[in-house]
Amino acid sequence: MHAGEVREREMGSIRVLLVDDQQIVRQGLATILRYELGIEVVAEAADGLEAIDLVGDLEPDVVLMDLKMPRLGGIPATRRICRQRPETQVIILTTYDADDLVFEGIKAGARGYLLKDASSEELVAAIRGVMRGESSIDPAVARRVMEEFQRLAASEAVTPPRQEAADEPLIEPLTPREEEVLDLLAEGLSNREIAARLHLTEGTVRNYVSAIIAKLQANDRTHAVVTALRRGLVDL
Picture (cartoon, rainbow, N blue to C red):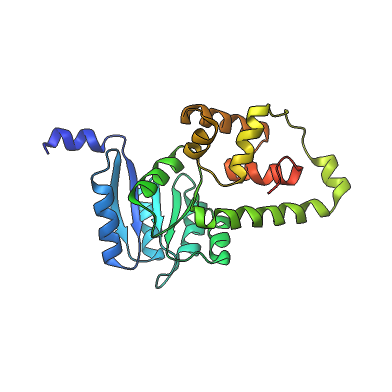
């Protein structure tokens, strides 16, 4: 590859930091991403502390974060990275699908949660997706995440009901098609899966998702689902 081609490939690339205590895993991820146009692996870290330092120095767009690591694990590292540099999107990539780890990872600010048996296509799609403002949760754990959000939304709705109702801002009603898209969001489907289900283009679905987020006055698609659950707009 000529130098000019290298520069063209790296310009505007999604800059990725790999964080895993196993070198062979980092090497495997780097190999997968090396040939993806528009994605550049800028560094590797063996633990959470090293990851935090590298994020400060290199300002990557995306961090692929393992959970169980020496010195500092993935969840506290994710929390610190998201607090110190919110522009960096963290995707947890782990072998663990235990409920508490999933929920803690998302609470810490991770925009994605993938298991290490995910395909290379799913990994690349998740990296590109979080840069478009999407969340990416492995289908194996997505249902449990939504059930937990439903439980939290229900508990928030209990007390104090009168005060909350008074303080709840009014929202613009959703169209029937937006309601269909919202129902599928609540099932944990990606934009591509929703597009296939409703026979729409992925770009059209992305526009519907953006409209839903705006109307529900949410920060992202996950927050939109939580808001919809709290308001009784969807039911799992």
